[in-house]
Image (cartoon, rainbow, N blue to C red; front, side):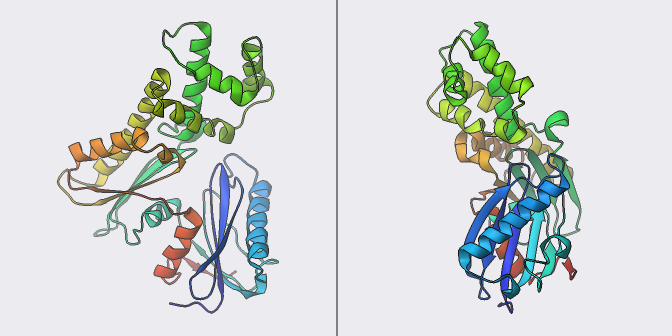
Length: 316
């Protein structure tokens, strides 16, 4: 299917947003990233500015005039922007809206979902949907205060807290946790305690910055660091529990269904993915797990074209 013009796709959450631009034949031209759009953590004005920057930069990179864009598809966690935000940039666009759940499935090349979608990014959420009767369920996604177990944020917090215990001498293990955080924040043994106080309380580290510590923990875990291995495993088990609990709401143990898993935390490979595989093999042996690796805004574009832009069609 060819649209009559260019397609802009917008995806984003609590850490960053992404824009992708497709030509009328469906070929990907450019992608560009911007900042957080989740209005639980940034203002509506900041969210709108991030989206505008993303669209401006992707059009500029491709050398395409905004007037040639006829469709804008978005799946933003929180806000829903249309012509009031983007009309000056893409005045001829029709707006279409999907959910984060749709994107997770699409990243695993699943466009008519019957199963479970799990995202393990800055936050962690799981959804279940049945294609036969339309029922759906969701768990997790409660944010930093009320939840986020199984997420990169949760792993970052666990790393900071474990390092505090190591620094105090309360952990008897050969670990580089404190050393890695010292390098990351530019501290040394003499300044570590006061430096971490400043980072945590006086000039508070952001949710996104805490989540960005997760790769430090998983890299150490991959090298066999015992404390990093322990906290990474605990977060992975929490993620598996979230996914399994969500699946159990709608599916019986012997049913066949898809499980799509995506998010930056999954870059750690089997350190995070193995408990999910083991849990579904044990409790839902006919479930088929798929890891979604495609960029979310790109997957969103393919999803929209697959459905001929049909889920929610709104001209503003």
